[in-house]
Image (cartoon, rainbow, N blue to C red; front, side, top):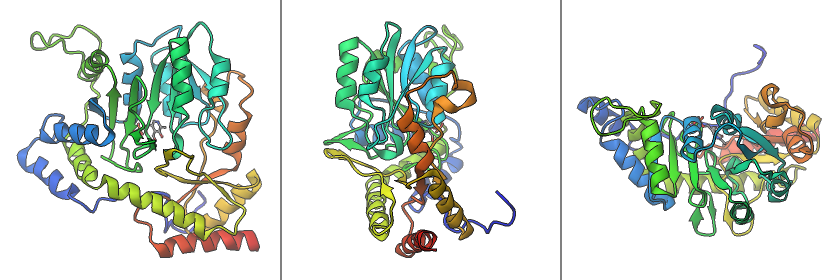
Amino acid sequence: MSPALPAIRIPVYRPELGGNEMAYVQQCLESTWISSKGEFIERFQSDFARFIGAEHVVAVTNGTVALHLALLGLGLGPGDEVIVPSLTYVAAVNAIRYVGATPVFADADAQTWQIDPKRVAKLITPRTRAVLAVHTYGQACDLAALGALCQKHDLRLIEDCAEAFGTRIGERHVGTFGDVATFSFFGNKTVTTGEGGMVVSRDAKVHALICKLRGQGLAGEKEYWHDVVGYNYRLTNICAAIGVAQMERADELIYRKRALATEMRAAMADLPLVFHLEQPGTTHSFWMISALARSEAERDGLRRALRLEGIETRPVFHPAHTLPMYAAGQTGLDVSVDLAARGLNLPSWPGLSAEQVAEIAEACRRCYHR
Ligand SMILES: Cc1ncc(COP(=O)(O)O)c(C=O)c1O
């Protein structure tokens, strides 16, 4: 950013840490349980499992290693193809490469912005082993259609729920539909631990393997006996302590974010922005309040104008198939390219005030009417 730009007054995100976070972290320090053992780890895992309605969950260092473990836990590796949306945060794609498998990119649905099951169906080959569905920006993927496809072709279904804490299909939380699901608790996520993640497994054996790989591959028979190449992907008790405090306020945080999305839309109802909308039968958790401008130039102009007023926005992710390490010439991803060109994310943190929402809307309005 040029030095002439004013300081950011309204960022895209700011974590809400006004509950018991400080007290619980202090308890870790006072008890000296500051590494990856301690009571908060178990509490965080069980609070989280209860909230989403899952049986097997394990806390890990971040959402990226959660994906790595998910793929390892399902035995995916070289020679396997994994279908993944192009319009996603790069971590989901990188994790496929970590295990030596090949990402195959599916286009997005223009209305939901999520991986399009019709496009997935066309990409299935004898080498396809899994579909990695990412619930982007808090909107649920069409898991009924994806689940049916996976069942028909004997594919594993992985859900990346990094952006979808609080997202539901019917009454059921995302992350409970796939064989394995992952979450992120980075500082800009709806529930945060600073850095952190969770892996959810449907099957107890997959869960056990993931736990083992997370903890250096310990066999458990005798001390320091490792019978596979494992990793240190453990979450610290300090991070888990923050997570426990966040889970105490999970419903409130989700409620506030959903209300904020409604307020933002209402404040800008007169502008030609098309907002990312909740789909029937689902609960959108609005990790980000996302919208489409009419063109890339209009989107960029709007972002510039807001930034000049100290308001931060973010562009929608670059489609992964356009990034240098994945640009292998896959075509037919036009919806992803279009959404990435015109899409932007507005300030979306739950503590945003009504005045700030009005200020953001006014800044947009000035840009459109000048
Ligand atoms: C869809 C998606 N997957 C994975 C990740 C990676 O999570 P982390 O940053 O915790 O490693 C993110 C992070 O923002 C994400 O948005």
